[in-house]
Image (cartoon, rainbow, N blue to C red; front, side, top):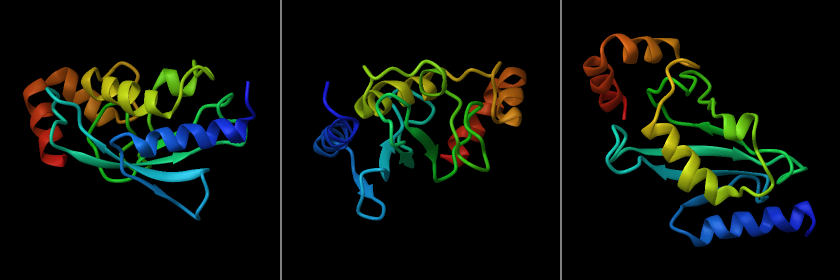
Length: 143
């Protein structure tokens, strides 16, 4: 297995060479923003978000820190900080995953299948469970 720094470089380059707009911060590969488009056939389709990614020194053995910079209305995203409640990133991360998995699988799944029973945004979770139509309208309004 290659060193964590080589792996970090490889993963960031893979992300940059795919269809994602990646903007590095402080000219390093530890912090960067990624332009993320809402998944097709979801309430978030057509929306564009800037996602802040911070890679710990021990990446890929330790998960990246992921957060929405611009506002999104979602039960599993903190409205103030933009931090994301996602098991695969927070608890069950594995070095087998890479940054493309985050943007092509994990975040789209989060937006397609919100989990209101484990919320970071209690208002969104409550509205989703009580009045799905109002919730859908609010998501569209914020996106």
